[in-house]
Amino acid sequence: MIRARAAAATLTLILTALPVAAQSDLERLETAAVIMNGMLNEAMIAEIPALDGLMPDPALDDSLRTAYTCMYDGYVSRVGEAPVSAMIDQMEASLETLTPEQLLQGGGAPDNPEGITDDQAIEIVTGCGLMEAFMTRMADSGAMGVLMQQQ
Image (cartoon, rainbow, N blue to C red; front, side, top):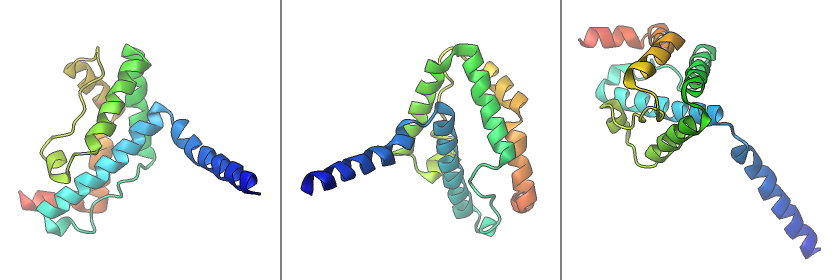
């Protein structure tokens, strides 16, 4: 009986851990992005309390998911999977110590994957519409209007 319980407990641990271990680099990138979006929301609300309740949900919607997928694919097509995976490793590691305030001030931004210049990264991100997707979400939520009033 004890062996059966131990085996069941071990199987449960393996099955619970399996999705995490099986997560693709794209899924890891999306997870890090959602966490960073939440942190950015928190920092912006701390700076501008009028944004409370207006910031877009940190979860990825279809437009952001499409943009992140495009960015990921663009990076991989330029330099391969290993440098992109290393960039995601760096993002995940930075989340362990990064504060929302540091993120708002530009900290925690990962280095480009090895082999991609700043200009190439900007070209990929712009071509994928990542910033446009963020700005549209900010406008749709009403947060952009508040930010414009603050300036």
